[in-house]
Length: 490
Image (cartoon, rainbow, N blue to C red; front, side, top):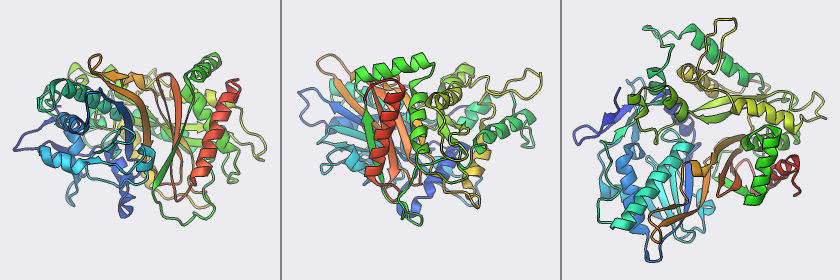
């Protein structure tokens, strides 16, 4: 299987994959509002060499360079009544039109947090330059790219920017792809190419795969309805509006203490942050049926794909595209039957560590002594089929609306990004990074990452359902809970 190759006669085009279609379905719920659920935003705060008086032309050239390298940034979706699924097509690039339509200079905003609430959906990826804060903000639909992919794209962008600054913006530096640009295959195509349990000719799932997918979804359903965070008291019939965001951070010394405490407890920092979120949520009044915590957490699949891929498949670019899965999380008995007791931080963190530490290659085994192991990639498409149906279904009668906080962690950003790009004295310095998502439902999405040794915890939410002050208060409580349980005085 080869990615489609761009040409003047035939721009790259393919059907949306099942995961892409799932996120497109979620995005489309915001169409009447001109917004998209889970649109990803990444802000890069940059410091340029002194000689650069106006960085805008260089930023534009670098943005053009990554569009040439990754045509899916400019891809749009065409829907046809007779087609099996919507089709993604990246038209042949027009340099001037791309810059005019997707690159915006925003003099009126103080920083990305001011900009965030004002953005609306766009057919392609876009970027915004904020001169007052020196932030470059990339925005894209989630069906096009995931969080890790966005960080990898930022690395490509900054490398191109450094090359253009060095060689001049009229040079071809950073603008040409090393191979013909393409639309990368879907997650399901890559997974199927290396699956040990192929779908039969008549479309039937392998029995082991079907059982694994059912068991995986069952882990989530065991905890439904989940505990949640309280929304505005008058918001039951509210229409989603703009999204808001908040963030807290720990200095490097305190972050080191948190990491050491987590090591002593035998857990990762991500599990500790997630446990703090669960504990804070559990202290609020809950629906009588809500005793457990149930959600999905995103797991990057790029390493798992490369671990089992052929050399040809391993070489396929996996920057722009959703290459992850939502693993089910269920923490049982977070709240006691009478609501008076909350499960301990360490017990919750251990439950979460079991999810984050799962072996994606040897993921699930059927009952019995067959010794047969199923990898997450083997079950990928069957699991997506069930998850899509679940999210499309209405909330069961008698259940509360879903208001479950979730966490998406990308860990140490230095895994994907450098602190500076280019030669000494002429380098572009990346001084800070922020990550956020548009939220149109009644949940708060938390993000965690570390940069230059400092832990950040961010929260994104819809302003129709949450007040900024209440989310800021929740974030403060999460930080306090994390520090207390790590034995660090606040």
